[in-house]
Image 1: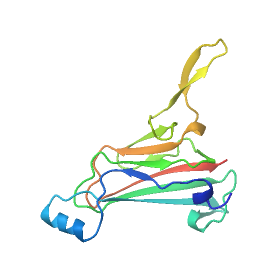
Image 2: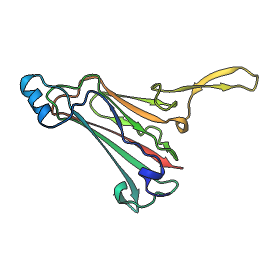
Image 3: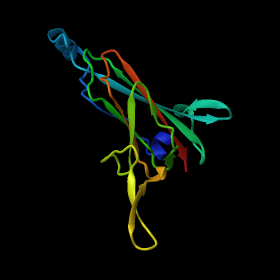
Image 4: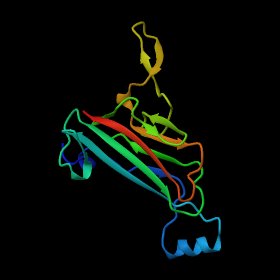
Length: 172
């Protein structure tokens, strides 16, 4: 496969929060309103372990079937107020499958998953499976069906604070 951020359709992480533009206008607004506003910046970085070394995906030309990609999401609130009800979503690129149990977030995060492209999330997505007798049984979806992983923190992302989350995917 060619460069993973193009060939695998790896999308940037989507931050679901209020983000204000930087610059003079935002600075003047902070001066007028002491409480300020949150300004969350999200950085996604990836790496692959190869020959005992962790290599940044920016420096890797190709990824190979069976390799595991480690994704790190760092959210920083550079604003003057906490970002309440903050969530961030990591995309599971096409051509990869989530490594079961690999999603982790810090500081009281809840991890949920989507199997429908991010429309709905659950701690354990459920599918309907037709049984041999024709009946339908609700069963946990296999991780191969997961399309997104979402992190939600119980506490607000404080002004000046950082949160991190991670997950791993295996190249098919």
